[in-house]
Image 1 (cartoon, rainbow, N blue to C red):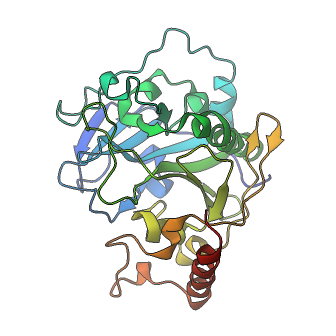
Image 2: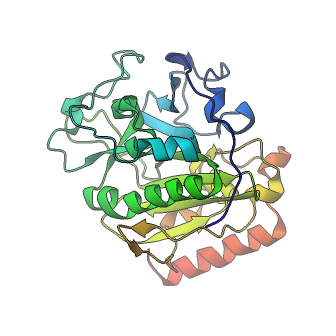
Length: 305
């Protein structure tokens, strides 16, 4: 799993919330200080960036969930967090958001879904990770098994290689959105993703899983993620890296590795609304990548994810 070199982790940012499109106050969490670019109907005028010392969240008013959480994980950070007790730490609404945007504990109560971290507690032992601005409704089996394995594998990369940039988030493909039954305020994602970039080797890729009880995951390119979620996780990277076929380590699920599935999620059949632009070179896909999308769609027709 050798993927990268060590670097100094910059932290200590003050807690802030910024309106959408107003720049960033969390540069330490982003590759080259550049936040993910979101091209999505879910990024409305109410979307807000929330900065914490160890991670950054970008929260949508429509879903009352993050569209992404960004972290710059280092070997030192992950090792310092190992074994730290979370006793007494409670989930809580994020007071840096307006009251109308805040998810509440009551939204998740007896909903059948876990309060799933995007920036995980074990990444940094940061109590702030329990803010509901860092949480999405997640299937309990997925959250506690396969997704946990992906989180552990990501930390192992940081420990082995010194650092890794991470962007995690939900993918909403159902129209209209599905909301938790408790008040109908918090949207339930169809899939979850974890995008990683390893500076030492220039390798990047995305783990994507269904938000369901399943041990099925696939590795996708950053361009796949952008096309089908509207999120360009690392816009500072050149297109050659964003379109490259990922070779991701298999998730380590409590000592058991989980092979990649041959099936693909249903969302690969059509791009996310607004995620393609013929006029923007950054949104153009190489013929080879286009060919793979055609093949992927054909495979999906005959094999249901």
